[in-house]
Image (cartoon, rainbow, N blue to C red):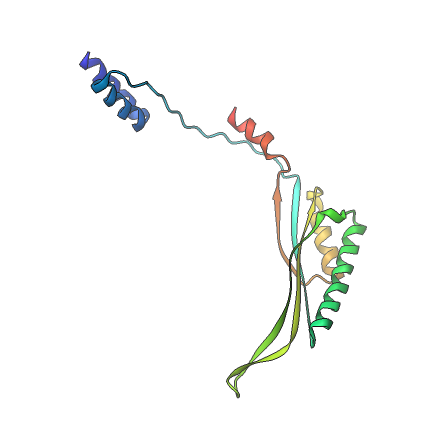
Length: 167
């Protein structure tokens, strides 16, 4: 009996260390369960069906109110241009908005001084028209976007592909 268990230990150690430990315990107690642990990797390729485009409108003015007003005007121009291309209201998602004091370092006085205000509006646009993301970027830039942060592509229903990969 001990020879058979020793053989099982050698074979299972190459499969997994967890099983080998269980086999040792079985020799001592004779009550441990036998377990086989299997690891695998499934890969499924799929074309993305959602594009997320990240834009920023930045406005600099002498007062906070003027910076905010200018930022609002430009943001409205950008959203209007995107809506004319078929982007829905709920697909334009504000992620960050702020108005900050703009400062500049004065070398002569050795201190920071106020240099107006900056308003930032960062938002994301989601579209299923992944093959034409360039037209959305072009329209937004023409309408006044000051920064295109990034474009990312994803799958709207990743669970469907996850199940395929498990198979």
